[in-house]
Image (cartoon, rainbow, N blue to C red; front, top):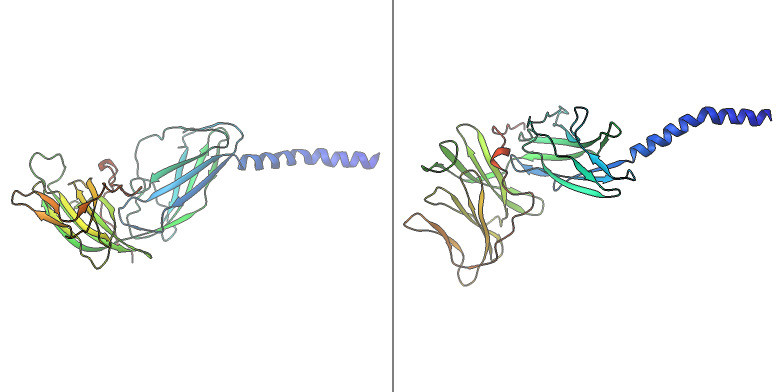
Length: 302
């Protein structure tokens, strides 16, 4: 009986710690956070889109919302020398999110307007979710991406026509190429070099390296680009003064090769070849909104 009493006493004293441990394990499994990037390398100022997966393992519906002075989701970003990268003040609250029990919600978030990640170098990113019901943070694993710049191949500066809704006096269009492990991409950048403001940088798609792209400016000072995307396949793009992608379509080479034609009245069109259905712009590569534009030019840390 004394031995039984001793065992009972040990169990009684250990029970709170066991319950605390099981509670901690259960709490740790409430929300699972996964973070992914489409690729390792990005061009300075192009959208760096993080894919954030949030899985509800709480066994009940959960509401994620800002509370206790904390945004319900955020990122921890550090630079090449492990220095913390603070977010850009936006002043806006994140809308709440309800996740059903067992459900996984995927959100895609462009880090470029949220964090100053335009300088060349390597960045480490970890996402966190604040669960107000527990007053607890849940973290993803750390992911890495690199910011570099592409090789400039063409550039032209134009004025802003009268009556056009666009801030500033001039725009500089640039075409750049970047070689990835399995392909080469053609990029466009629109900026005001005097102020250092970059309005947009994004990919126009894959390009065959030995075929130089064609570029023309129309009478509205919009940029037209025609480039070879694959054997006998050409991609046409029209870009606005603030970096908007106004048109994007594909042409097949037939008896004639597609080319840009600059008419006497200043209009630009594609002549030759055969047009295909308008090409869908690649997800995550559309031009950022003007309100999301980053300020300043990149600094070369190499």
